[in-house]
Length: 235
Image (tube, rainbow, N blue to C red):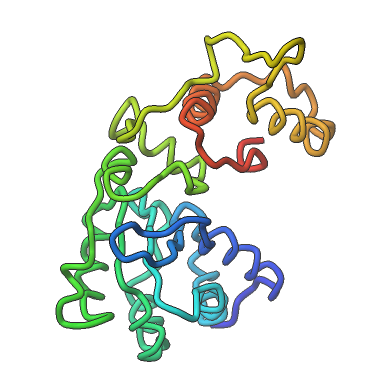
């Protein structure tokens, strides 16, 4: 079935689903790539070979490790679509995936990973790490370097109330500002928020009247942790 979406719309979906990071997997020293299931299309009609081709275009042309934010797979593609997509993948595409972290999986996601356990080799099943929470993921990789989507954080709250990472960090909330002589040293969060207000916030009506305790808490916790953030995903 042909897609009802234009090539540009498919490319935008692919950008939200598959995107690179600025960090590496510590055990393999391979670049980390994110696959975000919360950005999968909601309409079954949008799961087409054209969309999968866009996904493949965004994958590295060299070996890499994958972080798959499953979140219980909120928008599930059909089994027939998955089997057709698997047939589209050539051997080199399959070989380049060296490790997969499956975060927040469900029975459906586990079934899919079992189906694809031969992607790299007969031992590929050993390279799939089933991760229950973001705190669990932080034991394997530095999650502060990952641009984690808001919906992933929201889903993670169903699993744990607090994200812990295996290193000390200095919070930015509830502590005095640092000074250098008469100059105040503002945290990077200040610059990020001001930039967002100048560029995006001016088009958001009643931006200071909106209250969402859940999102506000997620943002505060992320800033305290020194998390990589794209505030445009929170507007």
